[in-house]
Length: 424
Image: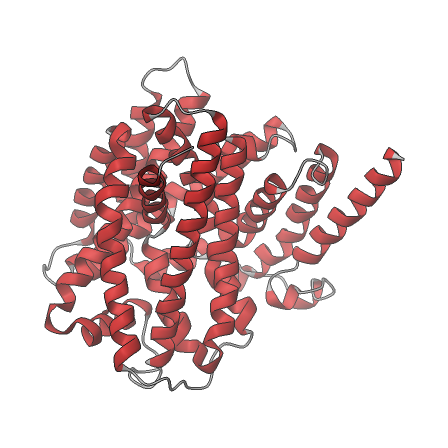
């Protein structure tokens, strides 16, 4: 059985790999806009940004492989295409976004330097950590995560004891589904299939424990990391909601987080916030680039420089994209998320389910259905390029951009009924 120290170190490492730019800047504004419906928004956000990602870690504990193993029941070709798509998205959007957030919140307030310079320095440091991946678990779990959690709790607890529980009216049309969709922007479901593999490889590098012990370790660490994320997210959403009347209604994400920090931490807010942002963003970028390099190395075992070359390319792409502002990266990411996130959620859930409910035929049917019904939601997110709404309004929940949910559930139930009928 894994000891308590290993479980805590793995828990902290998981938390830090999950908790990046989006996790930090999204919840406060979501709470600020949710008003007295903050709790319903928090539940929706927790569904897509906590529960599903932790299910992803549980799936990794069960499979103990790479992201490629998540889609093998559909077909090897599908799994390869899906894996490559996930890694391309990860190194192109959430990883560079961490550099953009770090520049805007931790560098710009102190130094009048260009974003490109910040991005170059940032991903140079990321590269150093990535090529020292054998030490990654201990560095993240023992040193960086405790600092992140301490500063976050300081902001939340200070607000909790100094503000009145007065909330304004909600500005969100559909609080629960709005929370779910905002949770997409954390990239945590995608992060689960990416960083879960990083954790598995890291454990294998430093331990020769049995399959069962490693499964127990990852499962326990996953639940503890999920509980920590839920507490932090709910605290940040509540903090934003309690400040509904203290800031202008058109405030952006970064301005609100900066304002909340100054309100909670006083004159030292900029220093504390800079440390928090830098650590939270940095650990996520390291996890994404490491996971991508691990995958390419695994797919190209005969090429001894595969890991190094992938790390270099991942960091170079991060430098190029990281110089853009945060709002732009979030806008660009949304259509991609509307397509890939539902597929990722279904792959996670289907891999967690017992084999008797997720046979290869059932698995394939549900995934294909999800892909088909994700296309209208994806097309509807294209702004000026989106087709007219009446083309897809016949799909249940399409008005909430969750048109894939009921078809996937229906196919899952019908496929299992047909399978059960054939077994008799």
